[in-house]
Image 1 (cartoon, protein in one colour):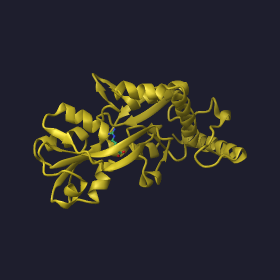
Image 2 (tube, helix red, strand yellow):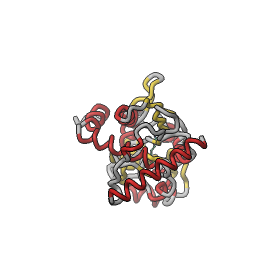
Image 3 (cartoon, helix red, strand yellow):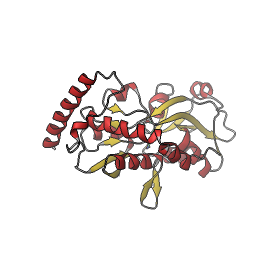
Amino acid sequence: MKNFVMKVASVVLVGAMGLAFAGCSKGEAKSSESSGSEKFTVEEGKLVMATNAFFPPYEYYEGDKIVGIDAEIAAAVADKLGLTLEIQDVEFDSIITGVQANKYDLGCAGMTVTEDRLQNVNFSTPYAKGIQVIIVKEGSPITDVASLTSGNYSVGVQQGTTGDIYISEEVEKVERFNKGADAVLALTNGQVDAVVIDNEPAKAFVAANAGLKILETPYADEDYAMCFNKENTVLMNKVNDALKALTDDGTIAKIVEKYIPSK
Ligand code: ARG
């Protein structure tokens, strides 16, 4: 691991020099071509991705395989970089700390870019949009954001998600679960009055549980991106180049369409 850190430090330096010479402005850094055979991942030849695989259609289990938009985009990125993708399913709120500790090369988990997270990790170019929505039981007196936050209601969330962070600033009673699906189960059981979660998983959970609905008033708009160790800009730049190529050739749109058909 020490060895890795030193190598990363030197490639980062080379990358930084490259940037200085190229005079790239913030956000449009070009990857350093000189680090081709250099080790720039935690384990040579592998791209280790951390996720929390209970978040359909971005990541979820099909049998014992993790599939979904993030899994497929990451696989396409790994392919472009000549690396083998390895997906590790961990608690959502341990992804960033694991990336910081170089346990994983990147976090890819329908993760929202936030100012606070940017203190701890770097984010790739966003590859998707998310919306925080409110799920309630059919016939609930909660009809919009204001009625949720002004009443004395309890809200279920997945621990450490933006849904958790935002709603915790507005309501007193927040029940935190390891999985979004468990928060939805608590709503079905009457243990909480509402759930705040990302719109696409919300649709999947509502489709799988009778008697629930998503309120039409969205709670927050977000960008999803992959997160990286702040030291490893070499890998992030390579991934950004790959994401751009995969956007330009339509691969990403095709993956999204497969999981979220437009009709
Ligand atoms: N977009 C939200 C966030 O970044 C929730 C992401 C949860 N992802 C997951 N794979 N469970 O906080």
